[in-house]
Length: 301
Ligand SMILES: [Zn+2]
Image 1 (cartoon, rainbow, N blue to C red):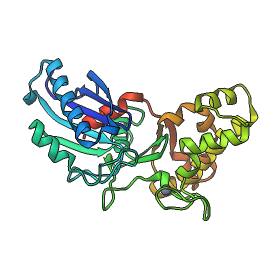
Image 2 (image 1 turned 90 degrees about the vertical axis):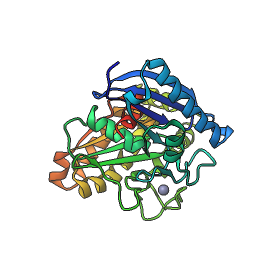
Image 3 (image 1 turned 90 degrees about the horizontal axis):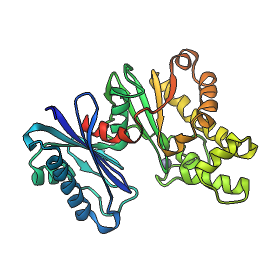
Image 4 (image 1 turned 45 degrees about the horizontal axis):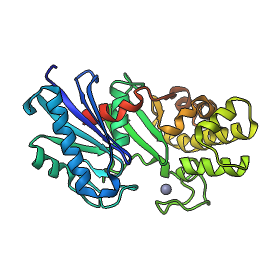
């Protein structure tokens, strides 16, 4: 195994994924474990440390052959100081200096960032957004996350919290969001809200896969839900396109598996809604790196 290898970790609410990644973004070795979310912070940290040490052992490399460790985490982070503000879905992570903790235990260099920023970096460097300068990356899932790359670099904002596209309001009035905002995009197209709507419209519980399947078979009610998701997304992204004039919008995450059921109406609206020259410029594509985006992006941190 060559030098210039880094370790990328995608710390998720359910799985911890780790990879040894080379300078070309190739994943040389993978490890994956369940996240012991209910066992508290110190068990999660132990799991991360054990996995890093096991991966290094398995690779046959020495610590000094590995140039660093990057971790993408599912919540807001101060990436400069390496402090996790909190995780929306795992308890006990308020203001945790994870960078310092891991550096002390591993005696290696560690960097942290939000997982969507890591994904944006991966797609920009090796994936769908290769060659672009200005890119917006979205993940559609339980939450709606965003990462912004401007002039080839992640845009972080003044307190490192930029990119919350899911919390852009798409109406003046509407339902209250977890973030305390009103009528946030996420409040309409987050996973559970799509499912809630499907249940009301179709009269039964249904999975997202099933909802896509029905729409593809021509079920009008199912299709109408996906069209509406695409249109609501377009309302928020019209603001983003007018504001940032990006080359590309990359869309990933579980809900994006509906593919053209969402992207079709989204592209149509994004040709018509934003200002003409911005609309002409922007391409809307699906993420390319799939499940590895988190690991690869983290290794780039
Ligand atoms: Zn919100």
